[in-house]
Length: 260
Image (cartoon, rainbow, N blue to C red):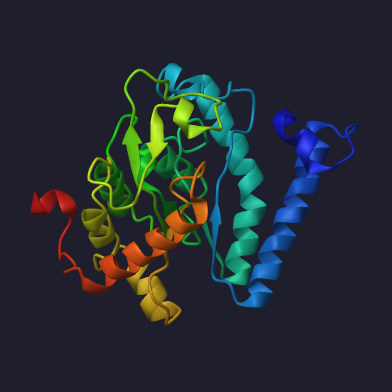
């Protein structure tokens, strides 16, 4: 909470609780605005409520009291937003990322269950976040088994760099242990063909939601994979790569692990 104070433009004299209330109201207005525009799914990225040190979660015992307290606070904060999303028929799709309330699939499932397994709380999936403790396909299998739908997805190819820290505040990815690469890079840690196929398996939520509910194509979106150099050309080539990949590939009929 303190980290964001300088960039929010709110009264610096507000307490953490007062600032949280202001932000909840703003988030509620975003949900209402999305509903008025006909937007059915919002891609979100939650941080850490409470006093758990940033990036400290991996170094605490699993299920520790501090993590439980953080989850309880997060559930308290989220309940009114989840209720509003249900009333507006909007899906809240959070990403899993190390150092946040949902560092892995187990974390997300635990919070989702504490919230009462709301159907409107789905997932925005990014495969590059699963280098710590589990692979992306293991995470997908866990989430599917629990009943959590993956409604939004992120295509972002990454390469692991030896000798550089993974857990770091460095904004420049060239100084961290995970480097954004071209989508079609054979050296990447994610097989984009396998990834795209797994996201379109019947019964997982993605294809059914966008084809059946919204009558729209699956929303695969690419990040500017090389953010420090030719950003626009890389982004354009990434979109073209996705269009070719999703347009020509033969989609699998069963889970990744079953096809190995």
